[in-house]
Amino acid sequence: MEEKIFKGRLISTFLIIVLVALLAVYYFLGTDYLRQSQGHEALTVHINEVTRTLAQTPPPPQDLESRLAAAETSLAAAQSALPRDINSTRVINTILKLADTCQVRAIPLVTKPWTKENIGQGYYVFRLNVAVKGTFSNLSSFVSQLENGELETLVVENLIVTRAIGPVTEATTPVQASVDLAIYSQFTTPE
Image (cartoon, rainbow, N blue to C red):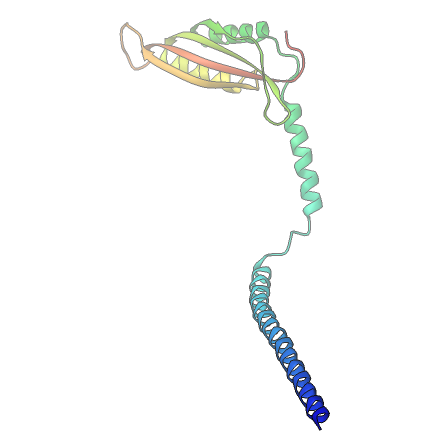
């Protein structure tokens, strides 16, 4: 009989161990399921937000390839617009001839050598300062023709105008100016 009691207790202990193990497995599986369920809800909310954002995004243009080709052509044209064969002597002579035409006196004061600037493909820049004397209307004509004349890549970077000493009338107000100029050229070997 003791053997039966021992076997009964052994079976009871075994059943209790199995029951505790099953409860532990159920607990771990249940909490993992709840965690995954909460993660699933968060993912569902995120998917819905992304879907709404995607629905609001306009479709890409149909002519994207042709627009890219046109932009590349325009870029190539702009890059080739910078002249290659500009030298400082030609620049200065052109400025002095234009000054004579506009009836102002121009004196190149400060010149800097051609310098390399790297923006995009890169280019050379020739900078100089010109002192100009004349009437205001002639100076205005000179600056306008500089910007729109023979030197297509010339840029007036700075212009300081002061009234010179002399008789003042509306048409002949004497002025003197300091003009900072920059002329751009492609990467070649300028003088």
